[in-house]
Image 1 (cartoon, rainbow, N blue to C red):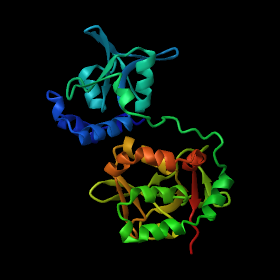
Image 2 (image 1 turned 45 degrees about the vertical axis):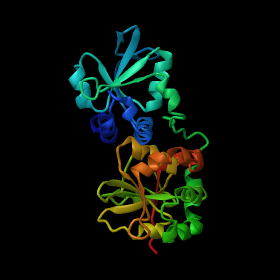
Image 3 (image 1 turned 90 degrees about the vertical axis):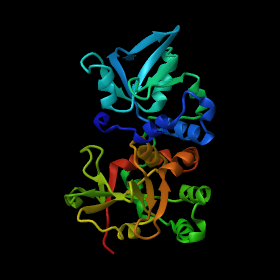
Image 4 (image 1 turned 135 degrees about the vertical axis):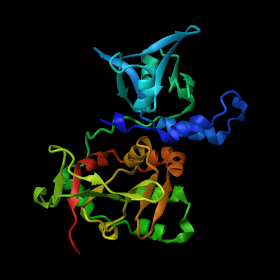
Length: 307
């Protein structure tokens, strides 16, 4: 269950900074940041399950119907007793669908704190919203992923990130990444090599057996790598396993889970993609670095062969 860990600290910060009484004082940068945080949020709604979907808690005001959303369970409990209404968390695109199907005119986020109100037409200003369902239909099989991993050649990307003159050239970086196969590092306190078949640990049936390696660099950063040799630069007492990633899927995960960004090749190239950068370029990442066939990769880990 994600509900206990959902906090949305970045979203709350930008809502608190907005001068809602003097909307002319809201800058374009603030509005873009707000939209970026909302688009990648996983807000909690007060609702009860009914046949066919959710019956959300709402209230009439000035002839309009208002729904209520919450950044975390503390805010939810301030507003309503959990035994009166259930808490459900959804990706933001779901609230656009709820607004349309249930005729919700506006939503109030954290009604007893920030009380931030946005009307249904706000969805139209946000452009494309990240999809909440990353299907694995037609995705790579275990053997195809292993073959892809074994044939990785990211030399063009590595040459790009090794050149300090390319720092900050994000459009070019993402274009190079779109033609590359990126890895991340999974860790386990157990030796999982005995579970592997032909070097592949399939977690689809048995469930997760590892956890994502993160770097603490004044925040909580996920990591991506251009090769398993770059993973070798990471020193840890845990057992290490590589995993292919869909960069767009990872970006959505990082932003919705309130992480601070991504580091590419930590301890060597140290290419830092901050949360602000990921939000700014999330649409571009979705268009250039989203390969749906890689969505099955999250269910596969690879034994790293010693050099």
